[in-house]
Image (cartoon, rainbow, N blue to C red; front, side):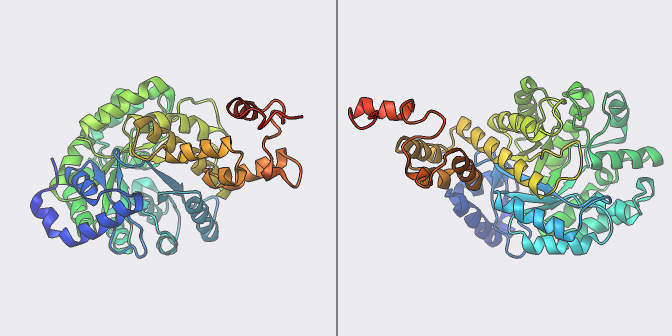
Length: 436
């Protein structure tokens, strides 16, 4: 079900302006973005209240985007730390940013982050609703949750994770799992429903949510509350039961003229990733799929940015449109600025690798330029083209002593006489290299 023509026409001027800006950012045809948005296959998260926002298109036919999660916990971090993490994420190439903060004075923190963030900015409103209840999940008032959604929308939040697909009847399915419910928002909603014996308030009052989101052009990100939290729980009944409800909610969002994307797993064995993505796209009517990882093994704490980047490449190549990064601190603690940077670089590599695999127009241009720079030993050009120029430059200099290192026609890996590229060049141009 696509957005209705009437709803699109009502927002024609704003949508046209936003889409032109989003298309220009990637060298896309604005009509291509318009068609993908109208069908629901893409979203352009763009709250008019978010000053200085640079809109972008999230959809599987466009460049794969990467989201960075930041946010303080009740145990660690401060406003200055989160502002620093935000800047590090943006400098490392984050396309979107989500604030997952909990605790006191979240409104003032969010205002400062929004003012400093030109990228689409997301939140999980239930965190603030529970924080206002002193962290007592069973005591939070659903009415407060709706007030928080409205307040955050008014502040300029572009997209919100809402765990509306977790229904009361799905909780027994999660109890059979090895790891249970690992989504923080999902666990909160499940605990509240279990304590009160009532249906998920987001699902029960979904039309109210849509009115708020429609008024402020907030993109709904349907949270996967029952995503698998370990390999043993992947692709189980709980995960796929919730997915069916998410598909229903996608249609309700579109009918109301609200942009929507769907969040996905989680911990998934590599061989199940393509099937998971294909199923999600089919059940959720080709809504953009936004995946956390997936993490492909449970045994690499400290390196989960790598285990997740492996899964992210497979997911994006299969059709996921937005990747939520995972940092080396995953499963261990709150990420710091260094963790944020490592996670971002790992996931930008994953996103680009997927775009190459999909054969997106222009995706290979930078790789071709890098190959030319390597053949000609143009080290400065190689550093410019690198995803992480400072790292490439520092490693080269530390491994290649000498003041004239950047003019050398070899590196310290093979040395001059054993350099394959020098030898290859001498085949095409005898006498050019291999001189002692």
